[in-house]
Image 1 (cartoon, rainbow, N blue to C red):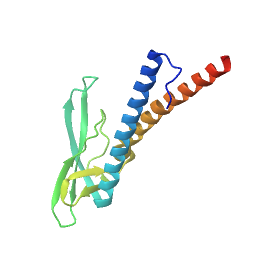
Image 2 (cartoon, one colour):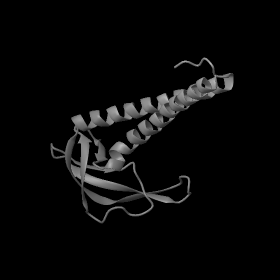
Image 3 (cartoon, one colour):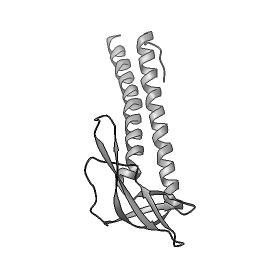
Image 4 (cartoon, rainbow, N blue to C red):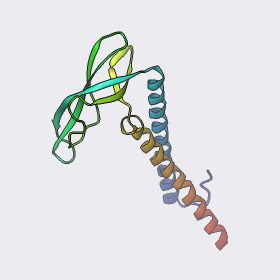
Length: 151
């Protein structure tokens, strides 16, 4: 991308926003790759909701409930895990069944098979990265076109 014709402030702003966008896009693609790699090696099964772990804190200072689930691995071991996604309301009823995926080598590495748990981080990071990097390029192209029109 050519920075000729931009004053120093414009060049610094463009470069900063563009690089932050590329960084976010890179992180999003890394998260996407990690999620896909996890799903490729994972076993899928049903888990039973066993209750929620209450943790206080966060930005609002209230209590979040993190659901705990129990499942049986393919080799018959019983495993309990607590989701990393919490909410302020009880999301499941007692003993409710949910679909999960777990790493057979490390069954404690289990995740709910839901959009929020699996895909929200890659989607948000890639989206923000594309928005910033693409927006910087479009603004730069628009300014260049406007400058050519005046010349």
